[in-house]
Image 1 (cartoon, protein in one colour):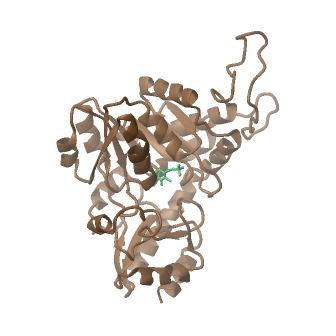
Image 2 (tube, helix red, strand yellow):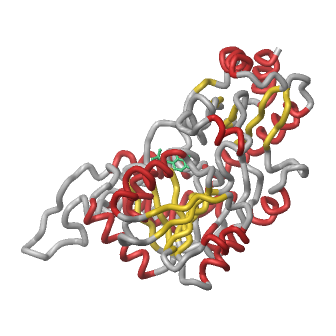
Length: 379
Ligand SMILES: *Cc1c(COP(=O)(O)O)cnc(C)c1O
């Protein structure tokens, strides 16, 4: 079955007891047993919940995996993945990874003896040079936030697998509609389902998918043993969001391309970072490993001050200023004072994250309205 059919049908079956066409929200903590150990496959809701089972089967199909585990947030999913490792193990990750992912590694797992090396992962050769005998996991994020760097998933997987290192791709920005890391060789793919999978900015959720049986069983064990599971209502909302994933992402990509083109001709705009532009350093790679170029873009101003950015941020009416991304509504953010405020200015500037840089999560509104909103705010 094709992707557009899978989003609607994979794992989803009418409820056998009522015929309800949509997956019910099984709001229960436990399940009746006819006698001790004599049950219908469900014993206790930390371990299994039927709404969650349907969601997990659905996302596993979308990522061309076999096992999916869902969690209460994207970071809870990452937390479960890092728990596959042991004290003394080392992680290699991108130096511009999502701030919360870095905080989890640096402020929690470092104290448990799991260390992290950060590198610009656009250069696979640098990955090779950074690997040590303790390296057990390579954490890829692509495209990255907010600089939209593109990492070569296949090249990094080839390097990692020569040394039996696990590769996980945070696929939040692309969504499985645009990019399928397991097909490119990754062992694990992780999502903040809060973003494009949910798609409506109304639920926090995380997911991991694999087709490796051993890793899948280990994650299932951790999901139950550590217990960071989502509630059934949240699983229902993500399932509902996924049904329109392909249409939402496609429209967001089309809108983002037009907005990027508008911004690149505006006299106040300095740089537009969008992988859809042939001038973007990751353009050819993005063309190879993604279906379209995504709904995220960043730009900065010729006037490089924070004050100039603040004027734009205060001036937009449709693009509302908020953290998060991937919803139907367009958002604008200012990484230097929001998501990346914890980075020292010098470090930020080194990677190109200037004071006036703004990040857009382009929604699915009418693109002319969105462009008009940016035009009046930049004016
Ligand atoms: C939001 C986000 C996360 C964290 O997910 P939560 O659902 O907020 O816990 C991880 N990675 C990326 C790329 C994100 O955008």
